[in-house]
Amino acid sequence: MGVLSEKKIDVNGMTLHITPTEKYKTNTIVFKMKAPLEKENVTKRALLPHVLQSNSKKFPTTAQLRSYLDELYGATFHVDLGKKGEYHVLSFSMEIANEKFLSDSTPLLEKAFEFLAEVITNPNIDGQAFNQTTVDNEKRSLKQRIQSVYDDKMKYSNFRLIQEMCKEEPYALHVHGQLDDIDSITATSLLEYYQNALAADELDLYVVGDVNSEEVERLVTHLFQFKERTPKTIDRKGYNGKPEAKEIQEEQDVKQGKLNIGFRTNVYYGDEDYYALQLFNGIFGGFSHSKLFINVREKASLAYYVASRLESHKGLMLVMSGIDNKNYNQAVTIIKEQMKAMTAGEFTEEEINQTKAVIKNQLLETIDNARGMVEILYHNVVADENISLDHWIAAMDQVTKDEIMKVAGKIELDTIYFLTEGGKQ
Image (tube, rainbow, N blue to C red; front, side):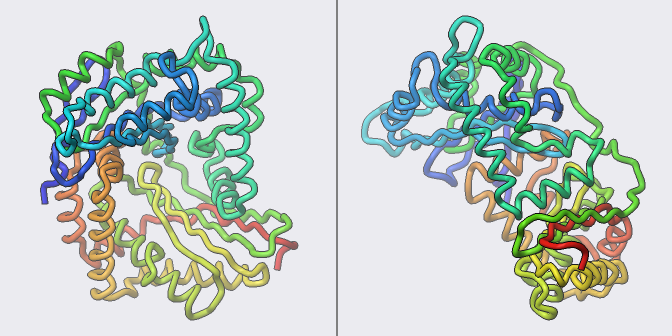
């Protein structure tokens, strides 16, 4: 395949990743800032990208900023927040037409870099503070985003499971921060935090598209000038407790119970048995042909939805399901039974092959989109690894039934969380 050959260059305190490809009609630029999750800064950090996205010195209103993007043949720009293991990652993404397809000779790629540099390095500040109105507006929006997690019971139960499961760990922090901290953030304290983040975060700039590497390097070197730094890292395999499975029941006015179960996999992205774990998850609960879906939802008709997913930078597997409140005990029992069946090797070669095919398709679908491709490449930055997609697919293809059983034996039940309408059923 070889689609993901990236060229990495150190430029002015950040890493530039260039992936020249003719696969896409547009060029995509993604700037990422990564730092360890910290309770005292998580909310400021969650607020930051939205303040920066609103306006800048050159475009002091959102309308002006958006209007300029329209002038660039409808370029798109948006921000995102992510939690990758115990890192808090800010992403600034820009997608712009490839100038080769335009009838005039507008240097669009150059203008895209100039725009991104403007937003990141020339924010709308008054003296030693961000623009007050912008900060006030974005604080209100952040409150709404955090509140929406409490209103959406599916998201809420997943958040509560993580909170209970990772109590003493930074991973328990929500990606949007903490509601109680928002009011105390000032336009001055936010700017001070941002200046520190720009000086200390691990910075990565991805450029994907039909581009000339030398030109990209020249533009980036000229427009982005950060100080050299040694970014803070964390030991992502720092958890070495032996979980004692705990059960938490929480009562709210909910018609449908939310049963979320957390396991420690003791396997991380880049580990030798990571590929076997991916297949384990696919057969156990990741897809519509998996054991949880067939046995909990289809056969026993116990769940409105049920699935499992991996948090591969934190070594977790999370099961999420929606059930009638009265079916709690039965649902927990059947989920535990599927886990035992996996450990005992009660799955077929056909299931393994089907899962390999689905995961491969999923990976290929992800890289059909340039931003998806960046996310796959970025796993290596988070994990300090260097795994190509070709290697990922080849390693997964070679996984055997014994290896899946072996990885199943490492997985430990940690927390069962149930959001329910009444008391215990």
